[in-house]
Figure (cartoon, rainbow, N blue to C red):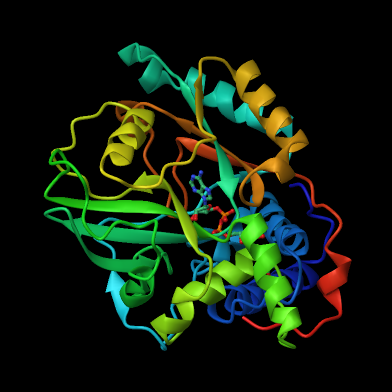
Length: 340
Ligand code: NAD
């Protein structure tokens, strides 16, 4: 077997160490909004863990971090059970892997047999934190973080302070009960000016937009959240019974008509070549966007295809996240004490 030259004990030891490390970093990232290492360093640890598991399937622990959605739920917030599960995304780090994933999806026997038309919905991967908004009869009744996918943290009072999130949906064609999912973020320009104001006031600046967004949303005092320049773009949904749409992109159109903030950067394309162009174009212009991105998400646009492909315990099989290579970190902020 591959890797069989490695002594069993040493391998198990490394495996357990990696699991402990990944858990520790997830807790710092999700509970404290204060990561101990960069995302690229975290991704390396995680990839190593995945590699060991792929090469030694017998070793895989039931509770391995690779088998679960990574978020943690802090005891500081009330737990909320999502009506339908929230998932993470499968990461890939090269264009070859994107193409391989796309070809595999195109070749999927079940889809071919049913004669589906496969279109790719290309989106930017917003570097913020996921939120689940539950609307009943058009009224926002609850907002929660993703947490472990089944249970999130209740952040309703904080979300109610975010102006771009409607408390009442417009129009009338929304389902009686709908879970709207999106990413909460701080726009790059607002992040810069917010930090300048903090520094001017003699306070510690925020470390980076992603952790600042997470820390801002997860404040104990909603009045504090209200001071932070938080925005949201929709990128998915949970329960939506009765929704009359055949594709995810069409649903974004509906959501926009209900007054929800929809990303201006999504595009539906027909070929994998166009997917790759979308990735390259946005990579060149990534700092010209409204917010930070850490990659591109490619999704099968059709709901029927999504249903056919389904989910693993952690990710949808109908989507993939391409991660851009890491950039140099912002050295200006590195040595400054950082608050969340
Ligand atoms: P992920 O962030 O790679 O992907 C899933 C998430 O992407 C979704 O939950 C959603 O919130 C978000 N997303 C943004 N734009 C989207 C779009 N257009 N469509 C759909 N989803 C979109 O996975 P994850 O499980 O949330 O966490 C892993 C990430 O967190 C990695 O980037 C990892 O590096 C980072 N992380 C870092 C540390 C650290 O210590 N630095 C620790 C844990 C996790």
